[in-house]
Each structure stands twice: as structure tokens, then as C-alpha cells.
Image 1: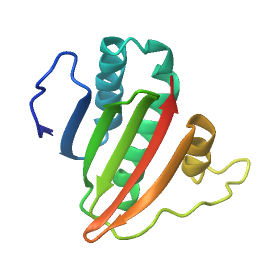
Image 2: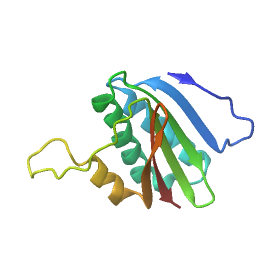
Image 3: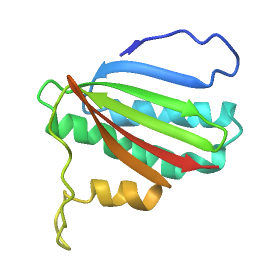
Image 4: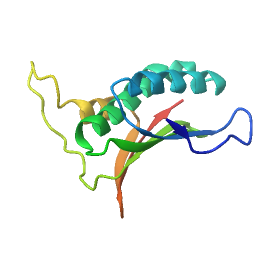
Length: 134
């Protein structure tokens, strides 16, 4: 994992990292998110933020060929914004999972856990973002 930028204020309003997602990446990113939420006096947002972040990063692991992405956590006036950029032009697909299916619920969970989310195409990939209100 490589931190892209150094904070210029404390507590910093933004954390950004570029990484190739591995099996343990979601766990490490959840710890980082939890630490920032404590710094931002928003520990009550830990559950939805951590789960949304896990879903977005896991999608990179499963569906992006090179598994590379940037993750941004941003403290906003309204709460927290999560952005995950990857180099795949493929938009995520919303599937309906059966009762016993192990996959296919990620975007449904994002919609339930967050106040808003979207996918923004980029010339060399896409950014999926979501926001959790304070």
C-alpha cells in the first residue's frame, strides 16, 4: 500500500491510498477508516462506512483484472464520502441474489447502508462513490 499524499492539517479531512487489493486489504482499510472516524468525532458511522468500504474494495478484488485502485475517505460537512477509483471501464451490475447465493448483494448493501451513491465513468476507468451522513 502506498499513501499518495501527506496530511497538511490535523486531523486531515482526507485520506487517500493507492493499492493492489489483496485478500487482507479490506480488513486493513476498515481499521484505517475506524481510526479516521475517531479523529473526525464520528465513531458512530463506523458500521456503515466500514461495510460500504469493504464491499467496494472487494468488488475491485473480484472484478478488476489488475486489482489496482485508489481509495479516498473524505470528511465532509454532512458526514463521510468514500471513493474507490479503478482502471476497469466495466460498470458494476446490480444483480438479484438468491437466498443461498454467496455473491450478488454488494450494490444492494451499498444502497441500504449509504445515503447516496453513484458510478462516475472516467477516461481510464471509473469511480464508485458513496456518502454516509453524520
